[in-house]
Image 1 (cartoon, rainbow over the protein chains, first blue to last red):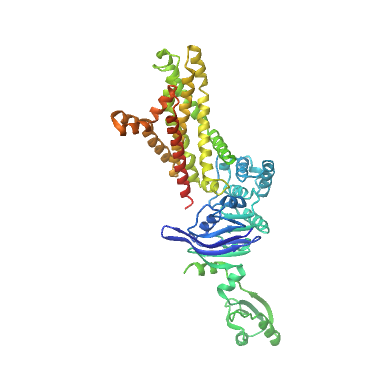
Image 2 (cartoon, one colour; image 1 turned 60 degrees about the vertical axis):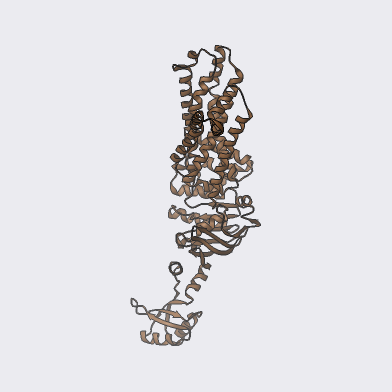
Length: 309
Length: 239
């Protein structure tokens, strides 16, 4: 089920939380929302779930318009709100049953769905406990279970891994990835590595506008556009290497790395790659090429660059 | 309809799980029982087989107990953020409100049902006006419905339960006491209007055994107005 967002604008007082953004998320895609605090991530998500009415713009989920058929949209969306609100005095099973009924799951299927959610979200040992007796990680799992219980086509998760320990984070990421193969998933996060590990596509928003959109590869290319290689060449004089490599057509700059005599950092000209040229040069000169590693721009740097100005 | 019942059942369970329901029922029976059967001006003192004394006591105890039940109903959802969870499920805002309203009304009805032994006892003491007793109960239920509606509205305003309680008491006391009191000192149209707004006047007329359409319209109007105002407040959360 595709989500289409067209010219969405939402204003709080004089501040524009979301400013005329347009994008589409396709079935089978996991979209990661990145952005500093107050960038408009949560507002956009709330607008998709029909909780917030936008000032302008149109959102459709599958064939349903959020403004015209909110009830239908709510049926196909599984939503984990930020801070994961739960009813502390209810026990896990009762809570999941309550959600299942609200989601209008057929009465005969409710026990089976609850059982599946308990298994999928690892709640077996905690299912008879009250929610206020659970640790933060388990509460988060209960939150995920309630979002998934009606097997929704669209999943919207606002910071799904906060409060989880590293093992649980890996499990939840795997879970989201698996779900994302058949469904449409939008998740927001502050943790860049998480978005990179879980999402097919990353969207960075800042001050209510989309500043970057693409796979992590595309974002890196977009941010720098230049290839940077770490090269180690043995059996050659340092100055000879620097002169020869610098003369290659594709190379913009070569920097010797001080800590290691035979190690260099090579920056290619925009849109070009120097990997083949360096290899051929080494063959021709009889040098021994022991390392040729593309250095990736860190997502953190891209994020910083895009959101700090 | 089914969605209303789902909300209503959860609220009822929550009343009983949090002991709130037990405390309310025991306190209600304790107060009303003490003043009806044991205190100086009790049934025996009045020398009449009537539940009038019980209705007078219940008129005041319910007035204080209802805000205590309703104060958290939406304020707590606002505070914990569960209101966002609820309103993103396939359910209309009005279903949430009506479900909560019905849950509290059912709890009050359970408490009133527990006073049926009072009725049986009085009926065994002497000739009792059955019509007046039945309409007295109907009067209490109608009055409770009106105050529950006011209480839920007060609870929706903020995310603080105390604010919900105090606002419900404040709005309630106007209808319960002040309008009637002021109306006693004013004649003419304004006095009549205030008298019409007094819960006491309507309740007493019902408790005497006269179930008038005006009284019904009065209580139902307050219920509808309170719930509709609550819906307006909830709608603002979508803004």
